[in-house]
Image (cartoon, rainbow, N blue to C red; front, side, top):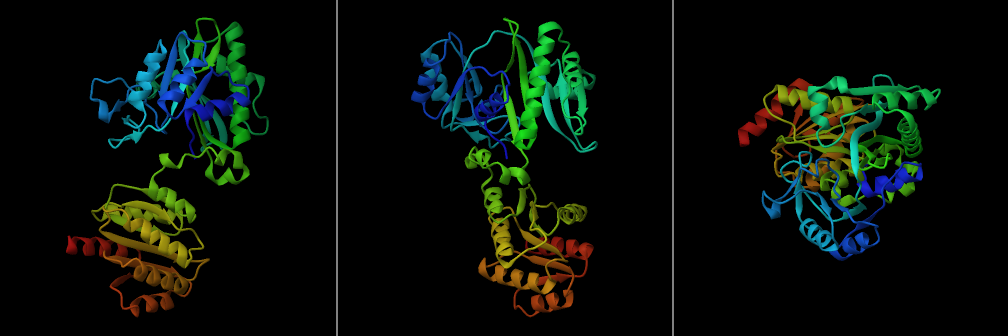
Length: 399
């Protein structure tokens, strides 16, 4: 689960991270009032969407010459103009794709005199099983280009979970950012606070870009992106309250209600599989046979009739889907129970596209008999390779 910048900053501030004063706003009037609470004379009006690249983004409704989703304002009238431009309009960035995201809330912050920008992030390094801190002296809007062209400017420091964050980690972060003296001490303190926040919230990512040095010689978190491990959110009801469902894909949101792991893709064959590894293999073999998967959908090991029905509805809600491949290994859930769920779901949703089902595991023959006697045009497959060939052939036959 991701949260907005203003929410991330408020959360990090609780752990001691240095944050500039700022207020969220949902209307133009609230944006002007928010600026009025700040000392000024410089304000920053920032569109709040779950995507990066806002400063370089463009609003669909405002034309190519309009400014992006992060704007400086020197007066309350300029704050009002920026808020008027942003709220309700669609911001397209490098991370949103061409569809963009509608801006429904803003963050108005106090301006800062920036002397230098840095990059600092925390994430889980799957290779080492440790939290890794990633630091670079080249912070700002072009960090992706830095990673591509000059990767030597990006430093990674893994932290042993047995010791946690230690003073030497802080010194290494300061050295990676080429900071000395008091700024080095500030960098170590910021890194320590971010590590505490990462652990304390079960975060999956904390990205500070930029971490800035002001002309007054202070480190300041100017932007923050925070995401959490969804599997740990049951421990954090306070974080769940920060969820903005308008930022999530409607199909993925619906899938989460049934504990389905669903991700929409750009293909034309819908997939319903139990097990993430099996789902990946299913998508690969569809592509190997010349077509593309329309989604990743893992119904889990205990697929029920309700889950299967919900999965079918979610898949068919995508107008790009021209056929469905069901690939189920009956381990915890027996194949006959799965087959009954598939038949019931197909009848309930008035299935109108080709459906190929591959079952394997406990009671597989009973499951196949249920499918064969259902009276529905369900094609049974013997193995994964056979299933992929059959669904591709079925889709091509009706296209």
